Amino acid sequence: MDPGNGSDILPEELTASVESFFDTAPPLQDSSLISHKLQAFIDRNSKSSEGGGPVRVVCVTSGGTTVPLEQRCVRYIDNFSSGHRGAASTEYFFKAGYAVIFLHRRGSCQPYCRYLPEDSFLDFFELGEDSSIQVCQSHSTIVKKAIGDYQNAVERGQLLKLPFTTIFEYLQVLRMVAISMRPLGPYGMFYHAAAVSDFYVPWESMAKHKIQSSSGPLDMRLNQVPKMLSVLRKEWAPMAFCISFKLETDGNILLQKADMAMKKYHMHVVVANLLATYKREVIMVTDNGSINVCSQDEYSDVEEEMIKILVDRHSKYLEQYRIEIIGLS
Ligand code: 9Z3
Image (cartoon, rainbow, N blue to C red; front, side, top):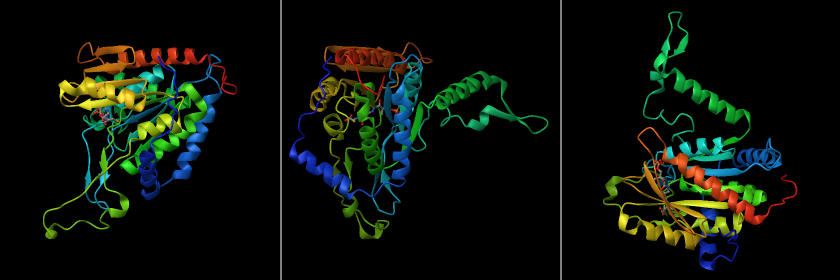
């Protein structure tokens, strides 16, 4: 596996569109709080693991970004992503000993309570005769396990949850995360499961107030979102191990598009999936071939096998660096 850090120069056109995106984006709320949390998280996890070696840190992106159509936003463009893949993958990364920065869409699936958005959490509890709250017998094992696993991750200080809603928030927080993970070098990993908008309305050309229907049919021009994966690989965190996802609806172009993404963005692995089957099967495209991964049955997660493979690839990637990072071990 190529440990190459993808740190060649960005094309001028891309640099200009990236600068313009960030210069004109509405400023991030709470940016100093986010930066403080990130710094504390990286400091804590870059010291050492129980076994004495450095902790591996993965940024899992999860859920879909929105594209606001008005500055005082009433309407926005959204996508289908539920955040299930990111939440499930986070659980398996923990199991493998990783610290996780969970960069997720507000209100999307969360690790250890993936079932909650569909099944009302009120169904899990009942009132006792003395009005105390009790977990229903039928759900008690699953709820206890979820609470235990979640508390374990939080107590170990190995879970940092950062929320986003819009494409503007997402990319600004992603940049902060990536730059703060840079000192981890190859111990850092990015797992881009979020469904990121390809087009957006630049803030300065967006209607300030609610668009009026009385003005007749709506014509709107959307700009292309700059390809930030390139920037992440080349500038923000060039030594990190990077996995991106490619989603298509047409099986005839899926692998070709995944292959293009590998080369264009210097990814280490591209996970290709089809809308019709993504919950149970994916193809992991690497620089030495593709691996098909399917869930065994409706009760098992395809993410379990995917994360095993990725952890193994990450280990090989680290070996190639013959790591001796002072200050991390
Ligand atoms: C994915 O392909 C994810 O697997 C899903 C997961 C979004 C399908 P859910 O959140 O779904 O479990 O409901 N993510 C990446 C999708 C994407 O936007 N990829 C871009 C592309 O295909 C590249 S970054 O061009």
